[in-house]
Each structure stands twice: as C-alpha cells, then as structure tokens.
Amino acid sequence: MTQTAAAATLSPFILPSRIRAAETAPNSLVTMAFIGMGLQNRTLLTNFLPHNVKVVAVCDVETARREHALKMVAAFHAEHPEKGAFGCTSYLDFREIIARKDIDAVCIATPDHWHAIITLAALEAGKDVYCEKPLTHTIHEAIEVMAAVKRHQRVLQTGSMQRSMSEFRIACELVRNGVIGKLERITCKVGVPSRPCNLPEEPLAAGLDWDRWLGPAAMRPYNSTLCPRGVCDCYPEWRSFADYGGGAVCDFGAHHFDIAQWGLGMDESGPLEVRPPAQAEALSGAVMVYANGVTVTQMADGPGLHFFGTDGEVEVDRGSFKLARGGVTMIQAARAEKEFLTDAKIRLYQSQSHYADFLERVADRKRPVASEIEGAHSAICCHLINLAYAHRKTIKWDPGKLTFADPSCDAAWLTRDYREPWKV
Figure 1 (tube, one colour):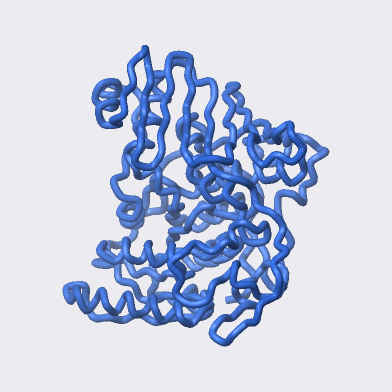
Figure 2 (figure 1 turned 180 degrees about the horizontal axis):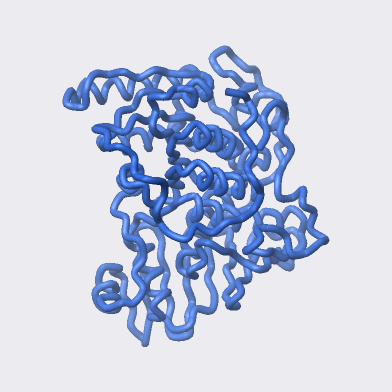
C-alpha cells in the first residue's frame, strides 16, 4: 500500500437510487477496525460493540489511547462471551489495517485533515466506511470521496447522526410537506469559522508520533492544544485551526447545515451563492442562497435550527422541538407528526440508530441515511461558508458541476497543500 491515496475523477455524479453494489454473502459478524481513538471514537466503539460486529483492530498515533482502546474491547468480550473470543490488535499506522483482508469496515474519527486520505484508502481496499463529520477537509476531497464510493461500490455512512434523531426528521417532514407554508429562510446556530494556527512550541515526550498526527498538514512544533496526551475525556481544539479542521462551521455546521439541506430537499445539490457578513470583522451572519430563493444563515451563538415559512415556524435542536402555526405552539415532535404528517405525501428516511443503520446497509448494500452524497454536499456547504469568511467575498457556486461559477474565485480554494508523501 502506498502512502498516496489514489486520485479519483473530478467529474460530479448523481446516484440515481439507494442501491449499492450487488449483495454480498451474509456473514455472522461484521469485522470492524477503529482509527483515531480519541473521545469520539471511544464513544463510537462503545455504540458499535453491542451490535453484530467483531472489533479486530484499533489504531492511534498516541500509545496510551491505543492501549486504552484495546482494553475496552477486551473488557467487552470478557463481559459478553457470546460474542466470541477476544481477538483485537492495536496499530500505530492505519495502512496496516487497510492491508488486512479480513476487515469488512473501518470507523474513522481522526482529526478532519486525515478523513479523506484514510477513507479513500479504505474504499480502494474494498472496505465499507463509517467516517465522522465533516466527511472531508476540502471541497476537492468531498468530490473525490463521492466518486470513490461509486467506483468501488462501497457503503459509506457519515457521522451526521442527527438524521437518525426523530425530532430532526419530523421537523424536515413538516417543512417539506408545507405545514409552515412556503419556506423562506433558515438560521443555523453553529459557531465561528476556523483560523490560522499560531500556537507556541511545547516539549514533546515519548509515546506520540507527532509526524504521523500532522500527516498531510504542514510540519509545525508540538502543542498539547492540538493533541492532548493520554486518554482525554475532551474534544481537543485542533478543530479551531484551519490546517486540521474547519472550526465550529465544520463541526456543528456539518450537523445543522446537513439538516437544513434535508429540509430544503437539497441533499444532492447546494447553494448558488454564499455571502460573507457585511461587517468586515464579523464571524457570524454568512448567508447561503439557494435557487428557490431560500436563505440559510450561519449564526455564531447556538447551536440550533430555525425554519421560517409564510404560515409558521419550526425550531429544532437535540432533544428540543417547537412548531408555531396559526397562533398555536406545539413542543412535542411526536404530537406534531401525528397531527400533521399521518397522510403526508413526503416521508423521509427513518433511521432509529445511526450505527445500526450503517450495519444494515453493509448487509443489504443499500444507501444509508447519511451516505457520502449527503455527507459530501453538507461538508461542501461548510467549506463554502469558510471560504466566504477567508476571502471576504461572495462566492458564486455551481452545485451541478461542483465548482465555482465565478471565474474570480481561484480553483486552488477547492483544495489545500499536502505535505509529501500524502495527497488526494
């Protein structure tokens, strides 16, 4: 396996149905590997283990996290002998996992700047992929991942798990069925964009392969803000810095812009224009404009989504819901579903569990609730917002061709510089 992820065609495509490759032979357990064992992937590991899986590999560039993940799997097997004997191996280098023929699927929860490289390598090796959101770190990578899933006929689920939460599905069904009238605008309270990294150097002790953590990003001195040592029950701040993440815009934005796209019926499309806020230094108020005239506004203080229609409003967040219509306010999503959606013409994909949905689609080879199509297009929305902030100009976008519609936008903005030998 080379260190360079195979490049894919840049041609955009639309998947016509939810069917993937021909059905694979059934197997008693899906063999899985987990790459990047910080807090998020430890949570995913805990959520996947009770399902029809056997975890055979874990990987991290930090020794303590690697060993801790291995102990988690061992402890689970000790408590659940019906799942078979413990047989999990830990790795420093994800390529050793990719090279294993006995692994069916990988779960990727590394920092964002690694997502596409590992995903593309796994797809090329014939593995199905669960990859955390945002699916990619650039627009170019989003296009490459969509093409690679199609080319290799794999199943990919993005970690935009709000699609598996009933309050978000019901909110989108209310909007899509016209319960609040004609949709006019949406606000998404997601936070601020990323910024350049200027962190000072700190001593680097043994146990962390810092060069591997940086990977395709430019070499810089170690700082614990980017990668805390040991088993940390926190979400590190690497996501705030542009070399490694897209700030809160790509963090909660990958959740809330995803739901906005769902409510708009734009899963396979996107905005025509992205405008920065009028104030030169503002980090809140960027606006995406869609072909139907609906605007989606990024807000810094949040999170949460608010759909505004001519006849009402729907406000939704994790565990909270409010429908305001005709002077009546309803705060129970299930009640709103029963009252307004019993005979709805548009019903959206209903997933009870993001993890079970992925495993079911691995078995039947159909398109999951948050496939590479939804994940890539939602990530592109996040990247366009960040570009509007970075360059403080209106971005004209062609969602069909997945490229800039304005020649004044530099094609180099679609991608990033990769440190050798890594590239996409």
